[in-house]
Length: 296
Image (cartoon, rainbow, N blue to C red; front, side, top):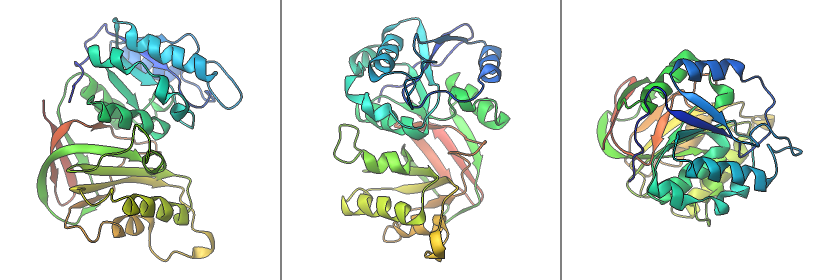
């Protein structure tokens, strides 16, 4: 697994859009990134509008490949999620990234790209994007620490099913994008890994359908642990489902003797604690917290 070099004050980072157009203020986020000592550089089309999207597919791909090839850019923080990244995945210059690895940071729709990077042997960061930086100090500070080389993190949980230590990479992200990856070049590989999941705005039956898809494909069988992040604004029409969404998710892993962590604040809430995707880690599932030590 290729681990990008940590950042240093004065480094340039690219701000690139691959999904939905910007519909919020980002001035505070820009000032926070500058306060970290970094120099944000926007792609030519980052703030473009093309209907729903932040520019045409060609414009988005041009910006991303520019950032991957520009040697002075040391990391890429994506503008926001929504939808659209999968439309350009197959045109990304991954060879440039493999020859000069740099941190790519995103969540939600960017899950698709993080899974693609993992399959290519490049670690990425599931964490706040520019449009969400400034919403929570803990999330911002943790992202800064991670990018600047810190490897040990302690996250609060609501509960765990087993107190155990596992050495394995963390993979996953947004459930919808994890399920969508099946059959594509970025198809999730769970064998021997810890799965992290989060979701927003779906109905309970849709959560069930996506998990059932992963089960039917045999994807869950090799999983060594489960981290349940934020499942936000999940609907339950007519109260057909009697269980909570966390209970529904964990039920798909009941046949496996693996630890399940509940309540990690990572996903579509203001607090969105970052995780490295694909990087080997020593993960301790403790009574009320998750201790993660990323390995080289």
